[in-house]
Image 1 (cartoon, helix red, strand yellow):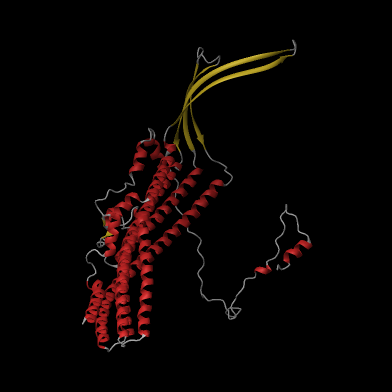
Image 2 (cartoon, rainbow, N blue to C red; image 1 turned 135 degrees about the horizontal axis):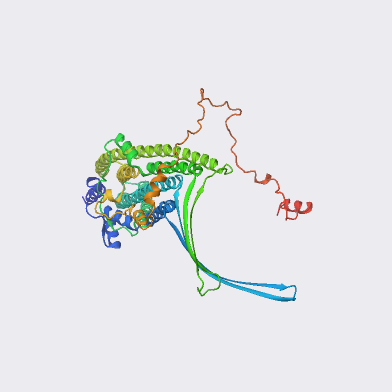
Amino acid sequence: MKMRFWLLAGVVVATGPVAAQVGPVTPVEASMASVSGATDTLAQALVDAYRNNPQLEAQRAQLRALDETVVQASAPYRLQASVVGSVRYQEQVTRDVFFDELVTNRARSSGASLTASQILFNGGRTAARVSAAEASVLSGRERLREVENFILFEVVDSYVSVLRDQRLVEIQQRSIQSYQRQVDQARARERGGDLTRIDIAQAEAQLGIIRTQLAQAETNLERSRSRFAAVVGRNPGALTPPPPLPGIPGSIDMAYRVAEAESPTLWQAILNERSGRAQIAAERAERNPILSADASIGVIDPNGIGFNNLRRGVSAGGTLTIPLLTGGVIDSRVRQALANQQSLAFTVEASRRGVQAQVQNAWNQSISSAEQVAIGQATAETAARALEGVRRSFQEGFRSNFEVIDSEQRLLNAQVIVANAEYQRYASQANLLTYLGRLQAATLSPAVATYDMEANLERRKRQQIDPFQPFVGPIDRLSRASDDPRDAPVVPATANATLRTPDTPAPARPLASALPVDNVPARPALPDQKQPSPSQVQAQSRPRD
């Protein structure tokens, strides 16, 4: 009766996680909570990573640096002014040929001037370069969205990885307890003559295998915890089960449409191509004339630095520059811009295909994982009932010790499958949202204070002094050159695609076993290197004892 009680207790312990997937805080979770002293939620982990992750902060800084390119590109619209002040002293010594003596002449002068210049007509150069810079900034914002999605995916993935590994550790610990009881029972029955040493060895061997699996599971848990700490900025506490993720499309066709409209990876490539188009217009605008005006006012004292004999000067004028011959550099830069735009256009299509493939893979993986969870749970329940029956039959002498071990291993495998499948299902859904561009802090947690990507550029624009831009800018935009691209050369289609007939047979035995390192030819001597003598060469090539 006592032995039967321990057998039934082993069944209850083994089947516990199958009957209730979400239960009270486990021993592993309790130990985690004791380390950090707090309970963690996925929402809090996402918010902490969004605020503190260094990769995300670095990308925000790069976007702020990219904002400055718009200010720099629009600089020709603004008034240029400078103040120049000068003080000069000149001493000249000459020889008087009549009196044969040295004559020293000294002169002092001082002055100051204020110069201002303004481009009135730039041939569309500035408008095109501003358009290119603005497209690059928009692409940089999509790059920031992309980094945010991947960082938050790492948060989600590490979060559910910790939960999975904690569960696997618990499964292995319960399995060790169950196998230890099996070993103890086998030893007791061996003393009674019911079992042999072989039966005990089988149970002990399986117990050793489970202990090695537990050691690996504990290592995996610590690795997942370190991933969480690296991306979030703190160690995990007692993690609560994650809630369902919002924003998942209802069909694969809807997922494709969402990716086309919202994917940051795709839109980053599209905006880069737009920047390339604007660069074509900027290079073509180099053929257009430039009209600028300048004015200067200054004072000068030619007799010293006391400002006693000041003279004032005022000048103003205009300059018209018309490119005539440039050595072919403008045409070359236009062709270069056209080729760059063609490359960026092909990159758009490559990005579109890549995003669609990633969306499809994540979609299929989430469906497959959901099916694995359902099948695994049913299998675990069946394996638990089978184990209970085998143990009862073993108690009554109808089953062998090996059959009990085999049934316990089936239950263990089913529980591991369920834990891995539940992790994979949630991670696949998060991965799908990542490539759709929907794994963002504002989408997942509406209460979080988000980073304003537009505020920095608007603030920099307001800080600029540009009294003439409202007049010069529209004229420059009206004269902007064409940004029409050209079709890239197309490789001719192949009528009959066939592989060339091989000239040699496929590789066969013997296997290659040594590299030809002994047959390397001698290196030629460098110009400043002394050529070795024949005796030295023979001495170097002689085998050593």
